[in-house]
Amino acid sequence: MFDTLSTRLDDIFTRLRARGRLNEKQVDEVLREIRLALLEADVSLKVVKAFVADVRERAAGAEIHKSLTPAQQVIKIVHEALIDILGREHVGLEHPQRPPRILLIAGLQGSGKTTAAAKLANMLKKQGRRPLLVAADLRRPAAIRQLQLLGEQVKVPVYAEADHQDAASLAGRALKHATEEHHTDLIVDTAGRMHVDADLMAELGAVARAVDPTETLLVCDAMTGQDAVNVAQSFLEEVDLSGIILTKLDGDARGGAALSMTYVTERPIKFAGIGEKLGDLEPFHPDRMASRILGMGDVLTLIEKAEQAFDEEQAVEMQEKMLRADFTFEDFLGQMQALKKMGPISSMLGMLPGMSKMPISGDEIDREMPKVEAIIRSMTARERNDPSLLNGSRRKRIARGAGATVQDVNKLVKQFGEVRKMMKMMGGGGKGKGKMKLPPGMKLPPGLGL
Image: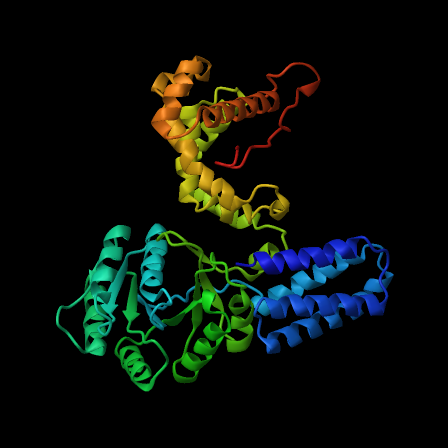
């Protein structure tokens, strides 16, 4: 989502690095460019003014023009100001004195509200909790069935009542059921509208009074830009919101909603939807998001995702095999399956510092992955475990089975061989000048060996 803004800021900082010390006029010029970049990213004018004023004040205090590394100073100041605009620190869900924790999910139709409720249930379930979803959206046709299907996918029960028209009383009965069944969390999916209106707010208020929510979370679609901020303000005037779930952060919109939301509403973004899969919801960390925007990566989130996707014992075993150069196509296929659990390669590359300047994009890698998987699956078990068997006729057969060309197979086999050579050198098995070893105690991150 922030690709355009990140590129603009990177261009500004690249030019800045070419300069020596800065004078006040040059600092003002940089701030003007940053201001334009933010406005083009659809950031609220109010937020842009506050941001630029904050950067200017910090810059004056840091005396950038006297610094030997002005670019580093400016980037550091912009990074800190971005964190402040985004909310300073991650704000998690509140914990009530007695369970269940009641999470009221609100939002307009099309914002991804029902899916966000299921994603949240999935996240809590992975944390060892026992959530219960409540189908209290009685206005939209098929909303109940949609939530039930999503509940089945994440293996979370859904409380629903057929032919019931009073959302508040239904929610009250769901709360009683959750208490009796010892559920730790009650996630209530409420009705939405195409726009904010009195009926929507009245029903939402009635449901809130019936269950007394621990948190009321507003789901906003980041793709709608400043309209998302306006929607949040409208809800805030009528309902006591405690936080925001921003969906579709993986889209190609300019990102202004994410940068404006917390500052304008004074409510934290608690979660961000980063994909269509039910596992694509992550806690929103302002410092990590600011680092992504400035091209500094987000290694902490990447490590957390790797830890969730890879079994620790398997990761250690895989690392040892790679360093012994015993790594096979069978192992590679297993790695690919685990990587899929972490999300699109494009989003993972965005978490690595400097990857925005790579000659190949994450989207291109995502498009190539199915072809690579098809080629490996077209091999026999013996061929996967012993690539030296792959002669010309075998490669032709594999290409036909994968719907690829022989050149595609040759390219993959060649690249795989180069990876094995590199791993052999890192493990100390190489000979000559190229020999290198991992430092004592150093381990490859789980699943990131490739």
